[in-house]
Figure 1 (cartoon, rainbow, N blue to C red):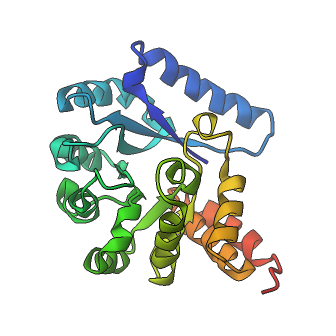
Figure 2: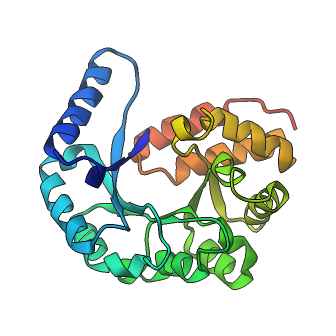
Length: 244
């Protein structure tokens, strides 16, 4: 399980990160078979200097942090503005991702930067990025690089036309891009978790059972879990008889 954490929302950074690590260890000790790592996301409406300050403060807790991300309002705040911290994080061994929000105010250039230029060669994954479905060249680039995209439909249909959202999800899938279906802040999105997001794409994208299995396969393959964990999960997935 990967969990995003906005450390800049919490003034006493060391307290929540220590609590997060303790919580993960407690769950494991209770035999709940839940394993988690954190993606520390920086707020792009804060300064790059603030992001670097929080990054350095979080390094003592790197055993629970698998990657670095970027979220919050991206109007006039391109990913390239934070390139210094992406370069540093990659050198320190972290995976990289960034939110690319959905809708007219958010330029395709932000998706392109995440795909191919931040930290020199681009991120390891794109969060959201549904706007890319309107650009054949960008879609081809994402597919060629094998980048995964985390798609959260319930988040989008709260602000975007439903038909357009599901047409774009279907277009990305049909283009062979590795998309997965995820949840986005369920407490703020009508309590919609991964299950509800999967149900809504099955219905409105007309995905077959086999295609739903492919979405689950994508989610496992693009995750940042250890290879042995991914192999185990894929074996479980492939053991399911989906029908058609």
